[in-house]
Length: 77
Image 1 (cartoon, rainbow, N blue to C red):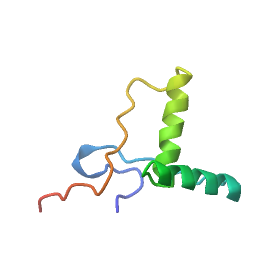
Image 2 (image 1 turned 30 degrees about the horizontal axis):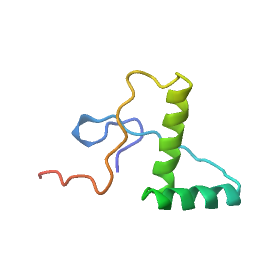
Image 3 (image 1 turned 180 degrees about the vertical axis):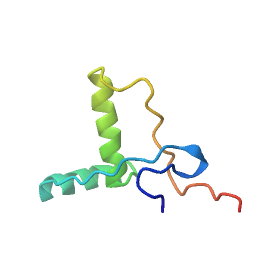
């Protein structure tokens, strides 16, 4: 676990954590959509937010790519 305000392994900045309250039916629809696209609900939310920001011309130029799917690579000890 990375302490708050610290850096993630391999020099990547730590990802922000956000508590999001959704109507249960909205979450269920989102989770079904995510499953159809083989994503987690969290990954689907980030995908949709990035798309909306890009479509509105508001996605910052220095935004990193979406994290790769699957487990992170095992780091050498």
